[in-house]
Amino acid sequence: MGYLKQLDVENFKSWRGKQVIGPFMQFNCIIGTNGSGKSNVMDALSFAMGERAAALRVRHLRDLVHGAHIGQPVSHTARVAIRYCDERDGETVFSRTITGDSSAYHINGAHVTHAAYIEELSKIGIVTKAQNCLVFQGAVESIALKDPKERTKMLECISQSKELAAEYQKKKEDLLKA
Ligand code: ATP
Ligand code: MG
Image 1 (cartoon, rainbow, N blue to C red):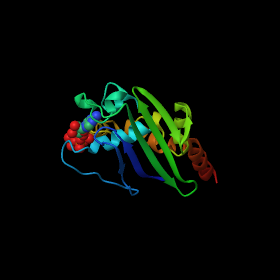
Image 2 (tube, protein in one colour; image 1 turned 90 degrees about the vertical axis):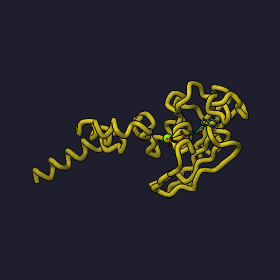
Image 3 (cartoon, helix red, strand yellow; image 1 turned 60 degrees about the horizontal axis):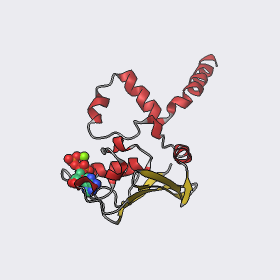
């Protein structure tokens, strides 16, 4: 199973210039004082996964540029790259760059459409359309309060076990018949 090795950020939110977040392990915990940028790490990851501005706590994509929140953007562009590693393909770099409010997507340096980018992410199990694959600050309570069936549905969607449900059911029935 692959994992997120590193995020390369450039003029994105609280990071000025080129900076590296990571390396990450297979399980990570980010700690820091209020306002130190913990949620910005989630925003950087979501941004590079193709999320819309609203989901990233800003009105316009250009607001994501370092300094834009105080009306002093340091650049017209910002970029985040996900360095993803797995045993089969080694490292794959998924990157998103904004210039003003436009986005450009690259995989290993090659320009791709948004649809192709999302498609490649889904091939490695990152299903951005599931929407619940990242649990943001404030959402924990709403998940805890879901009724058990709803929560199960959500977890099945995230883990993609739903796709195996029919096969599982058939094997179970075969076993009972045997
Ligand atoms: P909390 O513990 O309160 O949830 P946090 O560690 O999650 O805090 P974040 O929300 O990630 O903190 O970061 C907030 C910080 O990011 C603020 O200090 C804000 O000034 C900074 N910030 C947000 N947008 C930008 C930007 N465009 N340019 C520079 N800094 C930014
Ligand atoms: Mg936060």
